[in-house]
Length: 277
Ligand SMILES: Nc1ncnc2c1ncn2[C@@H]1O[C@H](COP(=O)(O)OP(=O)(O)O)[C@@H](O)[C@H]1O
Ligand SMILES: [Mg+2]
Image (cartoon, rainbow, N blue to C red):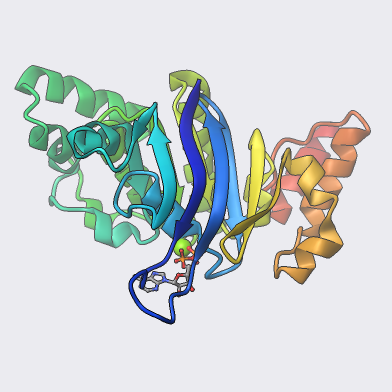
């Protein structure tokens, strides 16, 4: 089943003005339930706008977005849609409310009016899923960027979404933090069957995805497996995206039957190669 259907969607922030500019242009795509999709594109290509169209924060100027069959324009379904599509954003510091970790994670389910026993269960589950259970009584503000983003993911998980959208959630993190967040996203996809849409401008983070969608000026430029998309290096450069050398190297090795996993930084690749040797 398609978790998400985007049908001929056009969006502009100034729809009623004579100098209207479309930032999403007649875009169509379907995202299968359970898949892990990476979405990349240069700054201003429309990634965040598309993300906000997926949970009804923005509504199409033209066309339609359906989440598990429900159009985002259906006001009676918007509550379900928002609960089903959880979003994590770029800045970890803007996503925390409470001064104690467990209270922060409980905030979402509390707002849904969920009963106390169930909230306690969900807080523990969500924290353990992101590897932060031992920090349950900790202070979010004192944590590293990677830990804060994992908490932000836990906060969304506590609402039990079917789809998780990470909008540049790794952009402000160091390589260690990026690896942590990416690992958690892949685990949630595999173990909990959560559909993941990982928006990033780091091309190498797309390597482990089932599918890579490349956006350019409000349109889809490429949509295929990461390995296939990465073969279009020259065209990608023209739309201001480059495939890093270590990613290209990892792909070449994989084609030769040597799996070095998903290096997000040079050292990862070197580590894997050393282990193989
Ligand atoms: N709130 C807004 N009002 C007007 N224009 C916006 C707004 N948000 C984004 N834009 C414009 O829409 C285009 C797409 O932006 P965005 O979706 O944020 O791209 P990305 O996330 O790929 O960087 C850009 O030209 C941006 O300037
Ligand atoms: Mg953005």
